[in-house]
Length: 492
Image (cartoon, rainbow, N blue to C red; front, top):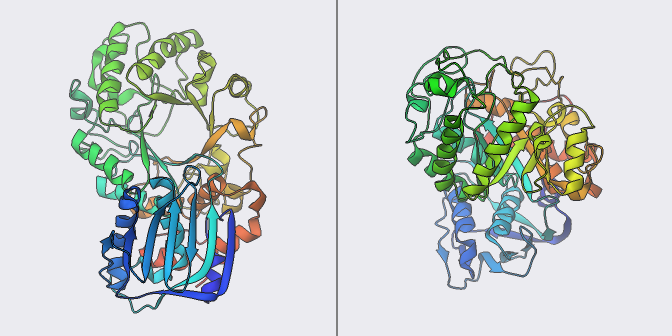
C-alpha cells in the first residue's frame, strides 16, 4: 500500500482533500507533539497515548517549537471543523475547538500505517502522505448507543467500545442504563434500585451488575478525554420492571414485581397517578444530572404498550419538566413527542417507517430530530438469516442497507435542517461479550459515522465499500472482532 492510497481510504470521507503526492512526512524518534494552544491538550495526549506503544518513541508533548513533529494550532474554523496539513517536516492541525482537534486526530490515525494502532512496538516506518485536508461535520450529533441492561458490561468493556467509536468521529455515547432486566447506576437516595434491580440480566445470571456513581463519573471523564459526551438514559414510564421490582410503591397495587430476565417488551409501567413516582424521577434526574456534565438526559418513552394514551400524556406532562428543572435537555424515543408542544426536547426516531405525523409536526414546530431507523442502523439486527447474533424484528440489515439512506430526506416532513444527527443503537438481548459488541457494530457503526459526518454529495456505496475494506487491517491490529460482509472488498 502506497502512502497516497491512505488518503483515498479515509473513513468518514473528509469534506475536502488536496493530495501532495511529492511529499511524505516520516515520524521519527526525535519528533515532538507541539502545543500552541491548551485547547488541544487532551487531543494531543490521546494521540501520544495511541502512538507511543507502537512506535516506541517518547513523543514529548511540549509548548516549545520543534523542527519536526506534530503541531496543534488554534484557528478560526467552525465548531468541530479542522485543517490538517502534512509537509515533509511537520503535520499541522488547526482548529478553534478541542472537538476539532479530536476529529483531526482521528483522521491522522488513518493516515498512518495500520500498525500504528498496535499495543506493542512495531518496526515502522511511520509515514504520512503529504496533503491538506479541510474538514467539518454534516451534523453536530454523531452517536453510538450501548444497552447495558439486557446484558451488563463492565467499565473496561464500555471503555473499549468508547475507544473504538471515537476513532470514527463519534461524539456522543448514549448509555441505556435502566430497563425491565436491570437498573445499572447507583442512585443514593433509592439504594434498592441497584441492591435488587442491579442483580439480574437476560438469561438469569445474577451479580452486582451496576456502576457506582464514582465508576460512572470515571466513564464520563474517560469519554470526554476522547472527545465524546455521555448521554445517560433512564427509560420511563415503560421498560421499568427493574425499578418496580426494587420499590413496591412505584406500582399501582403496591406489590413488588418479580425480577425479569426475558426479552419481551411493553408489559411494564410506573404508577402514573402516584406522587411518589415523580418524587422518584426527580431524585434520579437530580443525582444523575449532578454527575453528567453533558447537556442531555434521555427519558426513553418507547413501547409503553400497557399505558393508555391519557396516562402517557399525564406522565410526560409531569416528567419532562423535571429534566429541565435539573438543567438538562430531554431526549426521548419519538413516541413521547405527541405529548408536548415544547420545542426544547430532542426527538429520537427509531421506527422502520418513512412517515410519522407526530415527528413531522414536531420538526415543523422546531424540535430537532436524531435519526436512528431500526431497519437501517440498529446494530443489533442480524446481518443475514445465518448470522448467529442479533434479532430480526426490523429485518436483516447488511452493510449496504446501513449505509445507503439519507438522514436528511428519510422521514416525510423532516428536512436536512431539522436533523440534529444520526445515532446507531446496539441493544444487547443476544450480546454478552466485547467480541459480540464488535461483531454487530463493525462494520455497520462506520456507516452511521460517515452518514453523520460526510457531506451528502460524497455519498457513494461503491466508494464507501472500498474505503471500508481498507479498515480491516486496522481492526485486525486492534483485535476487533468484525463481520466480514461479502458486500465489502476487504483488504487482507
